[in-house]
Length: 541
Image (cartoon, rainbow, N blue to C red):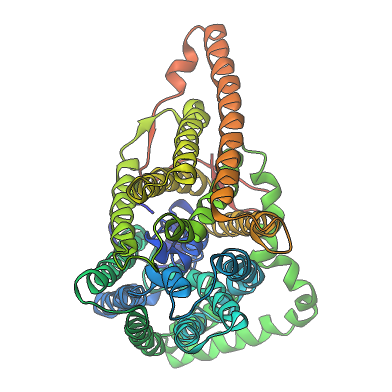
């Protein structure tokens, strides 16, 4: 989701300190392929190794590795049949009813994602990325096989279960690329990986729409084409290099390997002396190992989260991440059902889902890019900006839920997504710029998990057959009231913050005006002051 910098070289400790000053930019791929791309990507792009890697010393090695990983991201995002899954389920080929798709099949996606999100987050780090990417590829193949061969309601629910696994596994791709380069290259490779996924999503939507509009291709043929692409993506994932370290669980083993490599370059006498020292140092370490889990980075970061929630800016944007992303993704999950209700696919073959997704992907990319040039005093105006954009989204949801014109529905959806994508990089910057990289990863993970829990609760009440089982138009009215309530809360908070700011400014005789300088979305300077945290880490004030 943001920017660019030059590669850093030098010894390992300097690279580690540089990491604490700079955070990579999480990516936020667009398109309704967001079912398995956009949703999880934003949460843990920060889940990257913490120090520079030896690969950075060999530019050719890491450049080809990054190119191959971006090619994998592009190919894994090409699923031309994805924008047309809902019309396929409702078509005579599958013959499911709108009620079944709305209240029995689609809700399984949210439940599955919530169930596997935390295990995927932890396994990604513990297994060092690659196995989770392979699991994601297997899940993708399972999705399209079930969609092609399945006929029962239970089989379609299993398809959504595998979708949840695919979405949760996106964290592995989002963070894998940072294991290939030194910290100075994080922002540059983040833009590469984001661009490759966006291009894949856009290409996928365009290919699917061209096949439907001009190729006279049916839904099952489009699904076979998608199966071929995801199978190729699975083969590519098996060929990816295996990173040597990750952030939370594999540090000690990696550091030990680095010591062994350094020892190999020493003279025989020095090597013998180092081995002797290592033996002496390791003998008293065993009694200490019983409490080593308490001193792990992961546990220390969990303890540090308590201090994070006390910061107003981090608290505001974390709450926005939880509540607004919840409504946003519920809209994404059910909007294709709404389109089919307004413009039934069984009555007309001219379905433009792919074209609309391609347009929304482009607009989302442009608004995300534009957000990087916004220059205002976020400590004063954040609540107001969020409130205005949330109000506009609420109006668009009301329009989608009441209109009978499919083109009005399409345009409202594209704008709805564009507004959300505008705020995402701002939220990323506001959260990540004041945290160490490890804590940043954990905060994004917690925000995503809390948002997933909220999505699950709303889905269970509003959409599930065990709850209210509302039809899709009524669901969109519920989402409208949800965003309207958020708008009221944000605007009330904005009024309080602005009044308090100008009251304090008058008392200070205008001095506050000099202190509150505009802030734009740019990398934090490496020499910025750091505020020590309780665990001995540092967070930029």
